[in-house]
Structure formats: C-alpha cells, structure tokens
Amino acid sequence: MRRGPYPAEVLRLTARVSASGGVRSGVSEPCWEWPGPFHTKLWRYGILNGPGGRRVATRAVLEAHTGKAVEGFALHCRDNPPCVRPDHLRDGTPMDNVRDRDVRQRFVPLFGLSNGRGRFSAADVEELARRVSSGETKAAVGRAFTTSGQAVGYCLKRRLRV
Image (tube, rainbow, N blue to C red; front, top):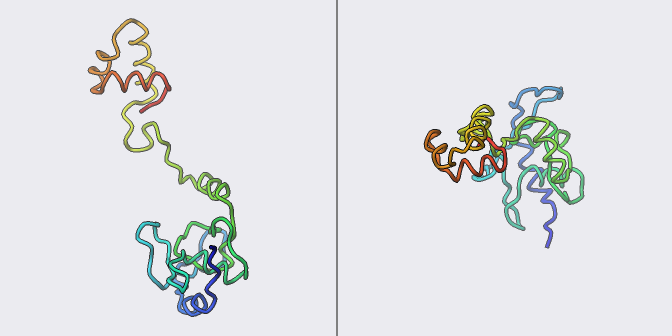
C-alpha cells in the first residue's frame, strides 16, 4: 500500500529548516537544510517519522508541495542531500537518478585503478597479455605481479584492470 504525504508534519518541520546551506552553483536561493533526524544508511538524507512509517524527507516534502505521490525518486537539482527546499527538488525516475550521478561524476567504476582497489594499470594489462601469449603460465605471471593465476586469467578474459 502506498503511503500518502504527511503535509502537517512536513510543514511543521520545514518551518524550522535552516537556510544555512549557502548558495549552490546555478541556484540563487540558499538550500534549506533538514532540521530533523537523518537516515543512518542513506548518506545525509533526512527522515520523517509519520503515521504511515518512516519516509525519506525529500520525498515527503516534494509530495506535500506538489500534492501527488512521487513515483520514482525525489531528485535534487544540486548535490545537497539534506536540502528540502521544494523548488530544489523534482520527481524523477531511477534512470534520471543514474544520469544525474554520471553528469556529476559520482560513478565509481568497478574495475581499474580509479576505484581505489585496483591493482593493474592499462600498461600492466598489456604486459600480462604479452607474457601469457608468449607462453608463460598464468600462475607464473600472477606470482610476478603478486596476484593469482586466476586473477590474471580473469583480467585477460575481460581485459580489465582488476
């Protein structure tokens, strides 16, 4: 069952918002920082405890402001998760959320040195391929690169910088 907006609770809490968020790029009005509690697992997103259960504050504020249920996500026009200013929020699909992430360069690739856990550069991958194609075993190449032969095989199969 879809829960509706909590207009009275939202209005009560947004009356206490702090406009200390400052002016964000491209937005002339300062952000309204959520004054209530924050979700422990959703990075810096406010939560609202209402009669229908716990809700993400941005969604509840957007629903109270527009008068209709948010179907997908309540997206921020700028990168400020605690902001609950209604004119800084918009309804969006999961695909819109992914596009926003990519535009803001928040995507961390699963493979490669840029993710912080990668071990092989592009030059290393080429060296692995050269050594294996010249007849050296994957296990021997793995030892030379302080990894396993399985990791070398996976890397070469996918041409990834694991």
